[in-house]
Length: 377
Ligand SMILES: *Cc1c(COP(=O)(O)O)cnc(C)c1O
Figure 1: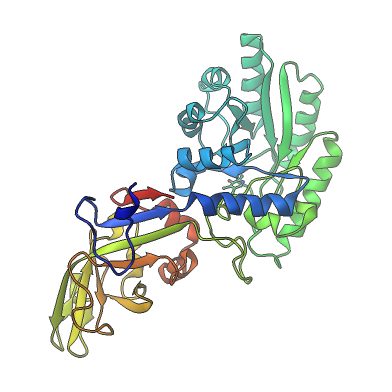
Figure 2: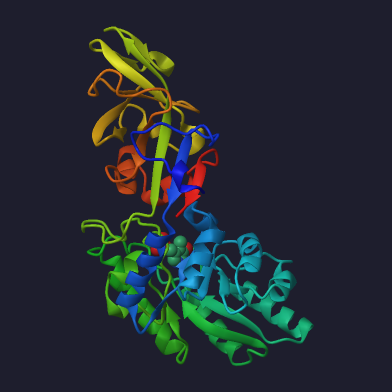
């Protein structure tokens, strides 16, 4: 993207860009976040979790930038995501499928050089059979459930798995892993319980490397690190844990254009359902993004946007394609058609928007819409 088209807050949109919202993804900050986590983990390593299109930021540009910075381990959730990402990365990049494989996907997975995370005896047997049929040695990761009841071998399947591993044939286990349910709440006892369960697994399956920590887990300290951590949200600038200042650099900013400004008299109804009634004469600006662009409808009457550092509350309901904001705090004429207001940026973090919407930063990121003009820096 041309830098003279670079959109600066408080200036209007050059007409060369046919968009009314601008999503800027700072790949430099992404790489610095990965470096920071890597430094905390050393000599263990930081993978990158790039599932759900790298939390909405673009799996390909994100993974490429991290690969260039030395990252070699990439986790997606679904096999289809791995297939899409595979051609973008060199062969020495390993791509892991957290959900494992659906029956029938095994051969394509083997052919594609993609590594499944096996979560059950059934997935294990299918992968073993595939290795046998293809007469090839195939890599895999084993995931254990240490107390989340979501994915992975449950405790009662461990004896059978241990037995099966004695005749593992052509499947090569690269490492074993588990996932923390409450790593973003450092004080919560579930972390210690899962750590203790992981230690039992390390005893029962001695000799395997361990991958345990997500973003929050990295900040729980060395015992949680294993040899390979799997950060996602922290790479993208989200806070890894509650109750501490966010040490990560912001990666995403979002600016949206004003499409109309008006003055309304006291008593005027604003938006669908007349959900807001003007308590005094006020100036309203309508901006060109709504819930179809991933701005939760729960921001109705609660969230805000910023213009030159001034907070402008959302009034009335969030519409599909637009939101009304109270701009009475600004001098008349400060905002015009095409002026840009900040939704994510120096004055408003992901966590701020998530809190106002009653959700988490992950959901805000992964729902960011496709009508924005995306700029990678
Ligand atoms: C999503 C996910 C991660 C990344 O979690 P963050 O909290 O975003 O760091 C790591 N491991 C597994 C198994 C996951 O599903």
